[in-house]
Image 1 (cartoon, rainbow, N blue to C red):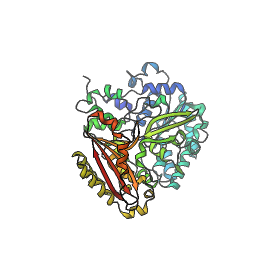
Image 2: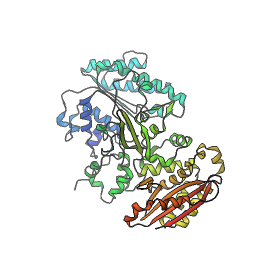
Image 3: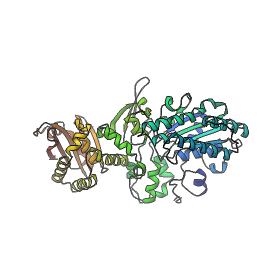
Length: 518
């Protein structure tokens, strides 16, 4: 059996990983292809997905630090006799709250690169001039064209995204920096910018038309993150004692591009699981932006649809200070991922988005509960879990009736989501999803789609929701029976429970919770 190594939690240096006995997943096949195919690249991936380590690997590669790559894919495919100077800029550290702070940080980064590369200050008074001169003088002094690597290129803007004026100010400051790359082409060997969001080229990369965005490229879907094969081979010594299927359900499922390609795991989650030996939402808890939850609540999002959200390719890249599409926000921050890609007619691409895994579905819905009118979400989840654990359908009815009766009337008055009938289903779904249950929304069968299926602890629950005026009508349970929604589950040998839920639009509460157990 392979020897256990150190877990590279938070380690972003290839030299440290190789020299100090950490696990390493070889990403050099993708880097080799990247360098062969082009020169200017952009890559968007969610936070804590290994982007910084990827850039550090490129830095060591171009600087020809050959010993670090022994045994890796690229070792026998690289010219170690021709090192290239590397300029590396990272905005990962600190929060810049205005243009002055950003300019100070940029000048500090340029100065650090000059010192490392042995370049004198050219005397340029402006940032664009400093950066341009640094690239040109580095090429001249080192005799080889320059590699530019920019990490977290968008973080100064994202840190201030809720203050549009400041965000625009910082966007202009970054645009001033990145615009230099357009005219530096004669001096550049390779360029890669990485970040979480994809701002439009017009707003941030004006003139840099040759920047290839590989975010959704099927060739680079696994350039960051771990595949199933990586888990089963590289991390094989860590697997004993852990449920392999649960690892997959909880942390796998990220895709960028074709759904036929292997999905990937969030490295941060997997490494902390191996360290702590417990299933927890490590990634979500590490830094979920409060503005995301606030924005979703303000937009009155129908939460059951988040797992089957259709969008056009153009919307996935539409992210800017003045216009943040919900689809783009959720996709680029890693809360939704690609489930399906279609081209119904030439050049027109449709993407179906959904949750990548159980961790994200449960955690995001848990964070949304207060915005849906449930401030005591933790106590309510315990009550729900106990009812399901005991398969006590009477307790389940009591729980949900009390839940909806307890939604404050002030909340209804102050939130536009209450105007939509989908609010009831959103509360119901998000409350269940926050427990991390196996839920299928609009579960398709031969005769139609049942609103929600829950598979838990050896029982299957089929829910149908109806909104009525004031009195129960029995339509929800009748539809479950008439459509034969239970037929697809009968062969599993599990007890099946049909539950028809009717909400009164006027009374704002559940007035029917009809149950039929099969």
